[in-house]
Image 1: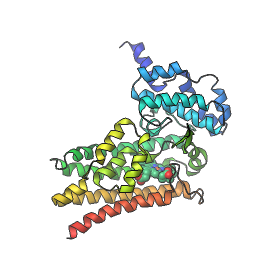
Image 2: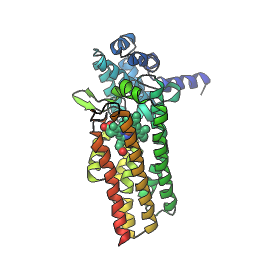
Image 3: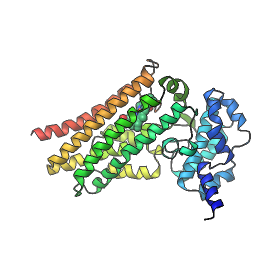
Length: 343
Ligand code: HEM
């Protein structure tokens, strides 16, 4: 490939809609930070991509570019909704075309905000360094837990794989790493700024009569795979995971479906009376509980202490009971193992 072609491919990957994408990355956040949403939208001044531009992305660009294109339109849509401007319908119709081709909900998603958000042209709502650090922290947390999901999916196919002990030990380390990474938020993200300035970016919006959630760590597919394959996910949690399917990119929908086939590793190892494996599962559960307790501490500082009256998280859940139930769910799995080992 000639060097000019390489440059234009890189440019397209970073800014799928050219000037419009540049506006969303470099200019819109300043208006958002000042809460001048309508002014920001009118400053975009005719940059909204045409349907031909959208179709070019749909037909000619790889998945990563389509997801970033959706992120740009989705973030613009949020500002447009907050500014009560009339451009929302134009954006929604374009998002729907892209959504059908990418296989995700028709807005900005966890994939565009976290997984495929490029360092060189980071998409933020406010541009503030607290938000930049928040995104990096989510990216690093996701990276920390990813190897565990990969190893567990291998074990899912072959629970008695010759490297099973190594894979389970690696999973314990990954969950511990997830805990460390999440905790770093305390040093890098300002709680007051989070609460006052960019939390409102994360609320659901109505698209075509249906409500769609904003990017949320509730959509962290790698942790979901860990919960399901190790056997902690309760029936009600599995149902909740099903309701989140529109937000997972196709690869993760597939991995979660793979993870969901029974039996879980817990059931396999209980059945086979494999005590070393059960003891490692127990360690994984303990680490998951510690991670979730750490996360509750984050929620306490970033939401509860900012406003004690807030009951619902941006994912739409009554977070006190929601997060506590997830801890109780893992405890139930620990008890299953303890009861068996005592027999
Ligand atoms: C300012 C920092 C953070 C706040 C205020 C926060 C808040 C919340 C809230 C309120 C929920 C409940 C669901 C809902 O939104 O309604 C939630 C869920 C969740 N959050 Fe966070 N969070 C933060 C940072 C993080 C980080 C850095 C991670 C790391 C991956 C993370 C991972 C999760 C996960 C995985 C869930 C789903 C519940 C679970 O599986 O335990 N959060 N978060």
